[in-house]
Image 1 (cartoon, rainbow, N blue to C red):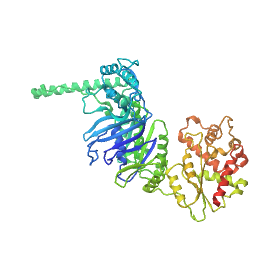
Image 2: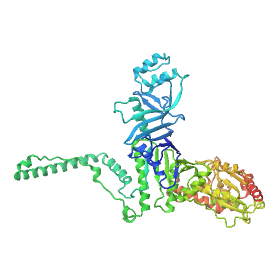
Image 3: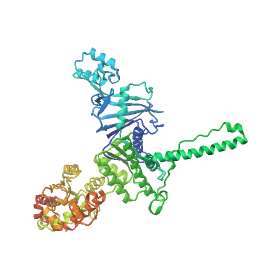
Image 4: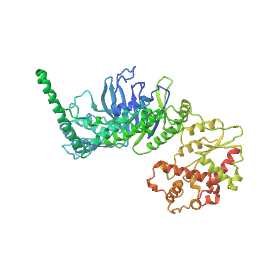
Length: 631
């Protein structure tokens, strides 16, 4: 199940109905005490039934709060009426967008009821049909003269037959369908709706919240809980339980003998008291008998390490606990929510953290929600993942994302500054923008070693051109781009198409946005995967001795990985390429990427590029550079 939307109303500072959309990676920014933690806490209350206490909006006329979640990619099938399989969609229990929408409604004392927001039939013949008993359903089918076949012992089958009979007359309206109520006795509510809620609960994702104000000690629950769970599993191991029982019997026997001797001696002194005593042995709680401390480098206890190290370790215990809960519940999906993960972290650790979160968010069953105040963190994140919480002119909270004005507001709010330095803007007429520094080197070297291109424009001598790394598809890109726009510079952007990768065409929307601006703004997406693909197979073989498989689609191939694997396989490393971890492979590819651009791009001639059909594209880039200087 994927969390698509959160809806909160009358909850803490959120009076009016407020919605926030979620993707795989989500970042929430805003001023202090604006409501970022409230969003994470509301999800914690919904998923983990954490305490709801004095959380209704203080000025609310109706003393009820509502926390709703909307899911996509959910399990539509449910089993009702013993073994009969039906579905949420067949029972009309999905919203108007065919999503699963669940709301929990709270009174001051806590949870009041759970409802499905569903696009449900309004026909009077179907009123309350989901909770109607089987005898009434059969009578209704008879009264309506339902001709379709149905199983008279299965309520779901009768309901479907009745709806099929009325299909040309059905009318729908979005409404609340109650599936759980605190006010009803356990056996007082309809078994069908209880079963619907029970089955939905079985599939809900694990929601793991890591808060910013935790103590960062080794006795923290995220450390203790996984270890206690591990100890419990160990104690249940085959053969170990029998040995523990033997120890228990021995201890019990000795304890009882000692108790009897004590009572006998007491009897000699005071027989009346001794009559009232009887030895009783409590079963030991073995999991509580085993305690541990974490020792880091040089046997230094964790609680003696710096706050940043402690928090980093706790963060990964937090992940371990979330995975344990997911495995224990046997559900595939996990939502990781982290308040200000940059707290107490060195900038290098911050970068690694964000890279790890981005990678984690790309896996099928994970979603990440972060809050942050850090401009260093924000500028590394894709701009479309960032949500800004602010107040409108009437003081009402609102959440916005994904437009240029909001990006400017986010950059201003967090203090994200352009990382562009132009010493004399008056001379510069054109900014050539690429993703990273390697791409700048590639363009310079290709221009330098090919007279035909240098004749069009000489990048090394022109004071009218500046080449800039834009930071990829991150907030920093938007900040830099906005800065260039204010300088009224012409711009030429060239970004990798990344075809053949896990994220093809991830810059396409930015290319389209820039091209729509017109007036000296041009953007390209490369026809090949990346700049490294402009090295022909023959040149790669000449440089590295790689025997290139002719079946490889060169325009889509991961060239750095092909070369890195070849070099590793030729080395004396005892580890196979398949056994390397992700970080090792990433580092090896990074070195090859640097080497190709910084060293070997000097050998990249147009005739070589022509072998892979990209000569005309390269020439177009430089012709457009020349035109934009003159515009």
